[in-house]
Length: 122
Image (tube, rainbow, N blue to C red):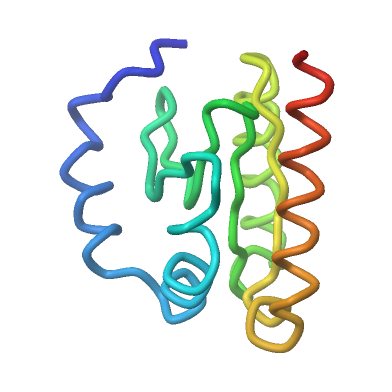
């Protein structure tokens, strides 16, 4: 996978950064933006765009709205996860509902996953 920009989807990624969902904004501005390890938002990874990505930990963080729990969304997410997994990128999925109702738990989960990934890479 070429982790550099896929020129065809870069404008779409930029648009997603400008128009984040309320759950993405909440997670970004209230936790990830100031996380001690660099995390980027709407990161182009090959033919996909990850909601959030920590390159140092090879970790993609995906926030899932209700469409991700319908049949087509589940199949699409599975293909994306398998694609990224082939390149050593772990994907964690968090529901929008969890971001809004269990924000502290979501932050703890992300922190744990990043630390665990970093310790395995060492």
